[in-house]
Image (cartoon, rainbow, N blue to C red; front, side):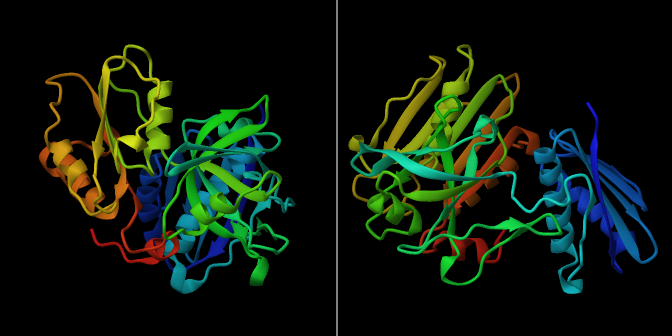
Length: 362
């Protein structure tokens, strides 16, 4: 299969210093990276990024086997470089294969087809669309583009820098991150589970008012999937349960480990198929507000880890629980980056938009 290639030469004063920093960030994006003072290479599972530093510029080169994968590499190279050289406001212009496209290859316009209440506080919405094979992935997080109420939506398009250009004004959609609970490519369906809050944010408000035929945009998938291991530890609250359920359902029958899920009460528990060697435990808040307890942190510390073999630990929790659990895994359990993934799915008192803008605290 022929390799597709795009290149962009970008004017910058950071060229000699940028290579190592960029490659270190690509490692955080799950790439295998190597670099010297003047060049670097990052190999992702879907393509490769190549960096070459000049005196006053840097060459970004993206390679992949198909246009969708090439677009992912271009996006990562451009995003990471723009983060690094933000003060310079770099002008990234790609040339090469597929650079005349304006549509986002990871975007799908979809419509609500079915609505079902799974528990008293969880609503499942089935979305219908076309060409959904890309969502059959070990990476199952998506961006939902929620249109303004009563306004014809406008969707983002591809910019010259390989990143989305978002519409301005009242037609701009609100973006929220969710997990694809189920994919049926032949039927053209995705299931998304929404936790229904009393103080409904954009996502749960959409789910509350949704009717068959309503339009929504979906971008993705993204995120890091679960690694292969001899033993697993999954940790999450209601917001992470769709991800935990998908991972459990995909596990081989011989998998071993524990899954700890915090919910409000017994009425929010869900049956999910999982290997008999993985213990699924629900922890009840019993009236306490979400994010206000240490149920998960305490339970994680009580887990009995195996004495041998490989392990993989995964957590999707509130910000304070994330800090505590990740710190425990790294500093006390001495898990390296390849053996765990801890993510702050939300932060108490913050909307997703405000949470993403807040400065990092650890």
